[in-house]
Structure formats: structure tokens, C-alpha cells
Length: 232
Image (tube, rainbow, N blue to C red):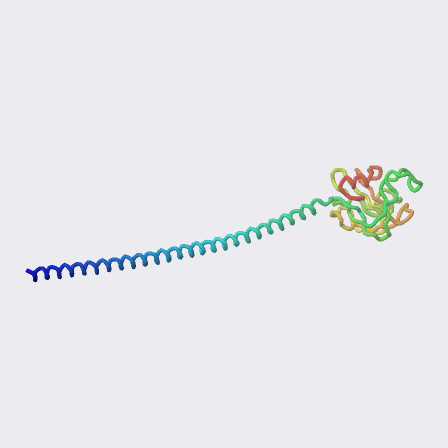
């Protein structure tokens, strides 16, 4: 009887011992699992943070490239605008110009004086003999030569240019005529050299604006040029 009790007691003790070991092992496994899970969570969080930083770096790089591109485009647009403005200003220059440079205005239009049979028919530009004379506007030469190009000896050597719309310009008292009848000239093109030929009291250019190619149809040349934007 006592042997059986002892045997049962021993078996019960062994079962309790095994249960304790299993429980301990299970506890260790759970603890290890929790540790592994915690480490995995930390690694995942670290990886996510790194991915965010990498994405932010890429976005910053793209933004910088876009800003540089926008700046380049803005500079190109500004340069284009400046070029267009310059071209517009150049295009807006007066189509008429003074017939000579560095001059002094002397006898004026409709001025009275003993030098003329009637009132003065043009504007005199006092310049030294040999000064370059240019076409005040583009057109076709309709008169050129001595005897006032047909308008009389008082004009000396002269030129008349037809500009269209009933407008003509005349250049007189020239020392040298450099164009011929029928020749087409451009605005600012040299056509003669100033002088002191004809009825003249000193070297100058006599300049007229006419409504016909002939004497007697002159209008105030200074007023005409100023209306065209020329500073006289």
C-alpha cells in the first residue's frame, strides 16, 4: 500500500516538474518572440524614416532643378523682351531726317530780304562747303544739275527728290551733285556736297519741301520736319 502511494506521488511530482519546464519554456519563447517583434518594429520604423528622407531629398532636388529652369526661362523672356523693345525703338525712329548734320539755322522760310525776289522759299542750314548732304527721305531723283536743276541760276547746283503723296524735297547751292535723274535713293543716303553756288552770300544748304517738283510750291520745311518727328 505504501509503495503504491509512493509511486503515485513520484509520478505526480514528475508531471508537475514537466509542466513547470514546459511553462518556463513557453515563457521564454513568448519573451523571445516579443523581443524579435520589437526588433522588427524598430527596423521597420527606421526603414520608413529612411525612405521618407530619401523621398524628401529627391523632391528637393527636383524642386531645385525646376527653380533653375524657371529662372533660365525668365532670363530668356527678359532678353527677348529687351530685344523686341530695342527693335521697336529702332523701327519707331523718324522716317525723315535732317539733310545735314552739325548745322546752324540761318535764313528761315518766308523771311524777307534783298537776296530773294520774293520771300525766302526754304530753310538755310549754315554748314562749311563740302559738308555731306543726305536725302531727308527716300524717293526718286526728278531733278539734278546746274541752273537750279531747271529752277533758275539763283539756286546754283540743285537736286529735287520725289517722295510720293505730293511731297518733294529740294537741295540747293551745292558744290557737288552725286545723283542723277531717275535714281532711287534711301533715307540718309549721301546725294551731294554743300557749297556756295548760285545766289548765295556764304556756304550753306538751301532746303525746301514742295508740293510739286517746281519752284513756287514750297511749304515751311522746318514745320514739316518737326511734324515728322525730326528735331530741327
